[in-house]
Image 1 (cartoon, rainbow, N blue to C red):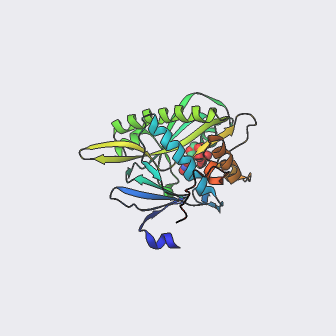
Image 2 (cartoon, rainbow, N blue to C red):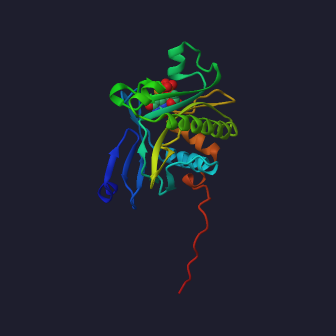
Image 3 (cartoon, protein in one colour):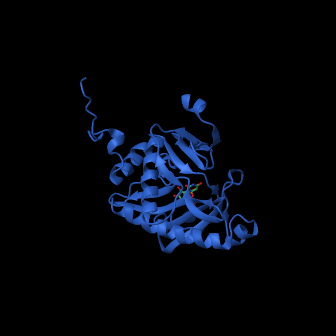
Length: 260
Ligand code: UDP
């Protein structure tokens, strides 16, 4: 494929490919249609998923930036690619939960959908070979994955992201059950700051339709419910990010050329 020849690939993950960016300190995130679950044991290609996640993640990152939560996002380049700042990824997945589901429900014997006494933050060590085990702050600091200050910063940012996303989704009739974020270190001379990295999309959130209870996220794939991309498209549509993907007459102004 053309894109392979044009750019130097840095890394290929399960759902994205990273290429060298046009300027130093930038990289290009390419969103694939590949979908995996259960630590890569279940796989599929869902046509159009990458395009939707590129859009949804762009929309969320821009919104976070607007409320002062720094992200790696610079700009979207095309249907499947976005330009982001090259950061040093903190090897943790930070999960915020508002309602019991997934691994929490299983681990603590809670009903799916049970209310939690308050939002809960969990850390998982990013390591596919180990199946991303849950870790405590003790492990994080002992193994130097992050400093105590960084843990505090990640927790504070995670709660702000949770408030922002909960409100954003509630406004379009969707309950934010839980989500995962990753952080990266951005070096600016002597300074290091944590920014939101990777993506935030229905691949990394649990989203339930408030009216019907319908699942609108990757659990449709995990649970073989079908209609995965259709659900992601509905999330995108409600957020208002689909207009120019589908080209419903909203393509913007047309350049009128002089005849001479
Ligand atoms: N999650 C993710 N990537 C992972 C693991 C979890 O994006 O590698 C998200 C998942 O989509 C859900 C939240 O984090 O929104 C909590 O996931 P959970 O711990 O319940 O694990 P799961 O049930 O997905 O295995």
